Length: 106
Image (cartoon, rainbow, N blue to C red; front, side, top):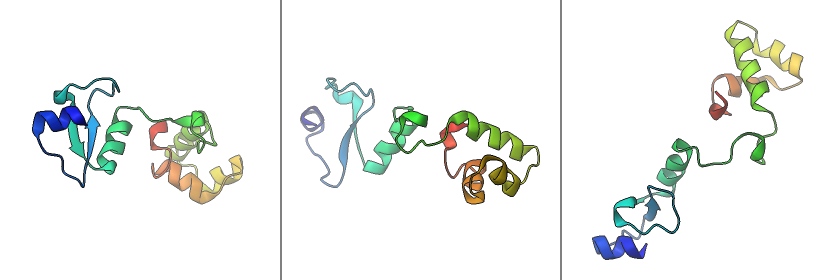
């Protein structure tokens, strides 16, 4: 943050300073930018820097299952029959198939 301040002389107090190169020791002002927490999270997601799949403590189901469900739905199997087959809720199946959840498993 100090490198950003020295280079640009001002910091918007409503924003954060973020790294383009994602190298914590780097202090090159050209690699720094100001943005919101939302923009930072999107940047992390776009660079695949987050924890995905079963490594994520929210990742209860393996990617292979999500992919199989999506393939079967693409071939016409109903959400209800998929839910019954795999012992899941229809709403979870819907979320997977429509990428409302586990979009990174595509």
